[in-house]
Image 1 (cartoon, one colour):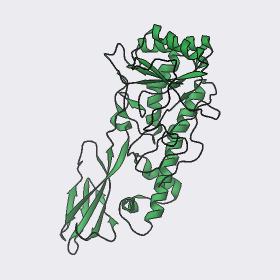
Image 2 (cartoon, one colour):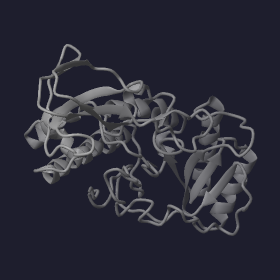
Image 3 (tube, one colour):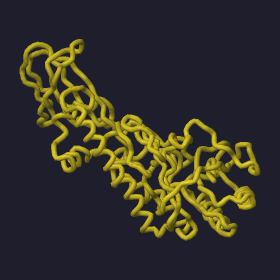
Length: 354
């Protein structure tokens, strides 16, 4: 049973009442999730009071014979005040500029705070009549070098930009940037700030499993290590042809397939596997809940275990009749059964990327 802690303001009396009600109803356990407040909050996510309440609930659940599972973050997706701009989710952003035939040396500037120029390209054409092909431009000493040409030309600039996504529906104290799910450093920073805090307060022996409820990362399709990782895995440098992600041309299909295959591998290795190893080190017992994913909208369709495929998005799950229906500081909601060994598991089938 999904057990929402709103605020995360709770009282021991209410925690006790709802745990007893769920045990009396014959439920097997709870999945604790911490989200936005419904009233003036009385504590913050990660505070001593919050962690003490979490420990109390875990111990009482054990006494009642209920399993006790924890989400490793508040809201969606993982992130918070501990995620710096360097560890935040990023995406590729493209800009076009029409120029004439004269040679130019254009200083590299950030169009938006935090933008990094990844690559620049040039092709014969105009904004009205787009180029049929591009070639990469050299970037030397902070300048884009453009030699003389004939007629109008288009300069295509690819920037790495922060998505700006913040944790959605976060509990008080958990607000902040969403992490870069392709970066092991970002995942480790989150586990140190949130996961270790929880399992220091609630011993692994009281926890059935830890998991990621729903990925819900929007537009993230870049990480600083992507060019080198792409070259290592795919056998060629992506930068000379990276423009094929946004411009149709020869070998565009192959480049896009290789690009998103690389993203999938980085996600699995630097997020899923890092969480698995962390859970094993923390002595988390085997559970029966895999991770639930919603893949980046810019690159993927829902996987078989995503909230969309399971009907979780846009549909209210049935609630247990014996529990209160009004919106209180906690709320229980039915969760479909999940399967597989381990504290954290990836989807039962590989993600489907387009």
